Image (cartoon, rainbow, N blue to C red; front, side, top):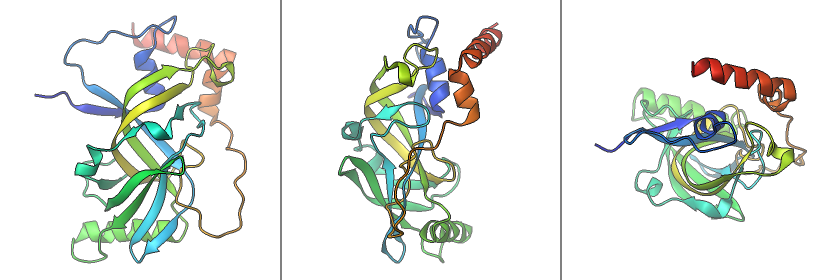
Length: 231
């Protein structure tokens, strides 16, 4: 039986792959495959009555201090079953399907065709709510679940290159699934811009827990936590 893909947060992925001195951890054979969940934000473009175009990923350095190369996306497996989920809830029915996913102008984008408002019971009702919230500007974030194929820890000190949890440069990655969600990690991963006249500002500051992890005190505290967790 093939190992199960487990999607984890960016910080958890770093914890799995770093020891003291940033040496790779050797895992036992048969251990679950580990992928990464990454959120992103832009704005939405309506293509037709129930189809919206979302930006899934850009080359922007995100709040986790990571960067995903837009040219590195591998989409073959995803396109065989292009379902769109709500918040990575794979046990729930999808809210729609991706009808056109690809690299456009240095960004990974996808047109999402939502379920009809009727015909699929509770799934239609929920998908209709998600569609209307996104269409009307109340939801604009997406989250990609992907399997890193080729990546490196950054040496950039501004991205934690000399810290315990440096940023990661993802050079090649396989898209496993993507979801519509509420809170992004990539400040540019939202829906395609609607004509609102609002200019993109600087990316929001790091959330307090992540910012603390990269501070000297936070680094020391996190190391102690990892030592306690590993006994």
